Length: 68
Image 1 (tube, rainbow, N blue to C red):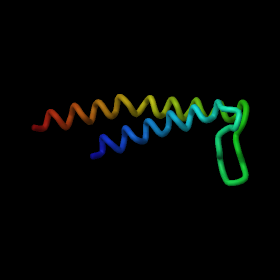
Image 2: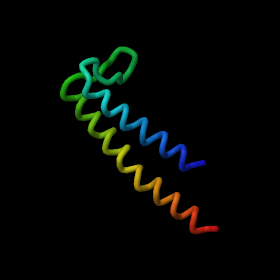
Image 3: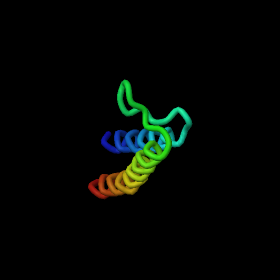
Image 4: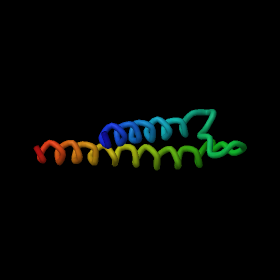
């Protein structure tokens, strides 16, 4: 169950990161939108965090399969 949640979070972070590269920008709050360089920087951080979670998902899958 935790594996599915980690996959969903990592995919969500990657999608959120790519939103920072769009002309509409990345919504930060109700009134603030990060556009341009600041949106891209936050987008890169989100993409990197999403990609960093993927090996963790495989590690949890492997560990859970080793228990049985």
